[in-house]
Length: 338
Image (tube, rainbow, N blue to C red; front, side):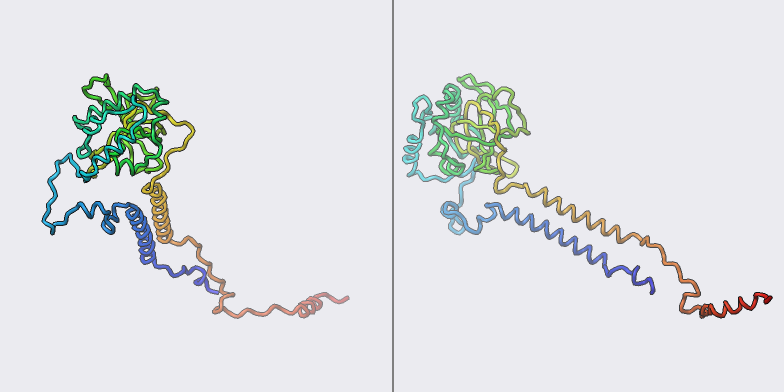
């Protein structure tokens, strides 16, 4: 049998199949990116805008142009008719203990249309710091509300301003903060960004305290789970590389480490699947390159030795073996007779 059928490779087009594998890997990457973008709620606002956006965003055809905003200003729409009812709700939500309440005139001066903390807001700012420092921890914890989610503080911030909130989560990026001139004796403050299980990893809280626990780390690599009762100051506007964002700002005395609890769970837009996706794409690419390398190498199978001439189909005819009886007869004739 010829050796050509054994050494023949299966039909394989390296260029065509390599292109197919590359296209499959790129398609997988596109699908993963599309899933990541589809999970973001802001990418679907064009499909079903909220009632607030539809009501307060005039169209160009209406002839009503929006006012020009300053670089550090944001637009927050509120109904003037609701201010008195909101003030009444806020008064009802204040702590029952009189020593823990923040004066109403301080809270009324707080604004939410500018980036950072303004000069008119500093009396309420330092009043919360001083009250939290002077209060007994158990009194502050007893007055703290535990039923206010992230969305309530963001949507109804005027109603909850000055309330004591109980919060627990993973603290990140703890840095010193200069208090500035004040009459309450505050020189060095500390700020941290807290991520909770309820709000996820994309909606932090800004926490400002007057002191840190002994030995508590500082810096951008902090990953500590803490809890504390703190005053809700306002919806804090801050500038980032991607525009202006908002976060609930809480003011307290100090936070406490939580021992024996796991880290904050991933939020809805957590990128924890990206390492697995990159590993899958890398494994496919490495496998493709390895297959390409193996196909480009020459075959190392030793050549089949040629058949001897006598076994070849084109060789001479082979004589049949002699008959044993003839051989014995010839041998008997060679023996001398007595």
